[in-house]
Length: 277
Image (cartoon, rainbow, N blue to C red; front, side, top):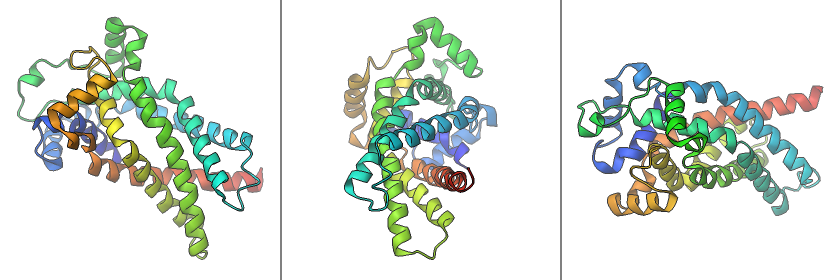
């Protein structure tokens, strides 16, 4: 289900303020007219293949950083210092995975932004249409060099680094609080719902930056925006403040199940490793 929502979020953020899509259902209908490879699955091959590696990097760096910061002694008390340590460790983990996640995200956004509207219009006529991520990467490198794959890296850093810290801190806070209030509830259930809510909360904090990032990365040739501030000001002038929260509903529907499963599996695997290794 979350796979289908990926292109919807990107299209709403990029085109949502230009009256191309009246609402979410209109966007769904439009994408549905395309084949799966050119519609709902477009641009997802590399993110899916790389997701395991990126998560391994993130949680590996997060655990190591949290240990180096010395939060083990504070974990029982769950003091303010403990949660600040978790926040910092999450931010560090988000920063470390950025060199790999940015090109992958950039290619995904470029490909998904090329999904044509069901009715077709002049915008679609002038769009490039890459056959896949390799063709898109080769074209971007040819025009802009390797740095072209890092289009929007400043916006992605402003998104990923604080979001990662908020994500892990919120998760720790929710699991601890829920366990204290409802000690009889299985840890898997607590971890699942805490993970889902943490994903939604962290994404809401950085949704405006995510919109700017998507618009920058969907414009690899720099025809529309010269940079972060230019994109922010032009988006506001053209579409108003509401544009920075486009895709919020789709984001929530995607963020909850994805992060619920990821953090539940992470916590249970960590528990097993501590028990048997």
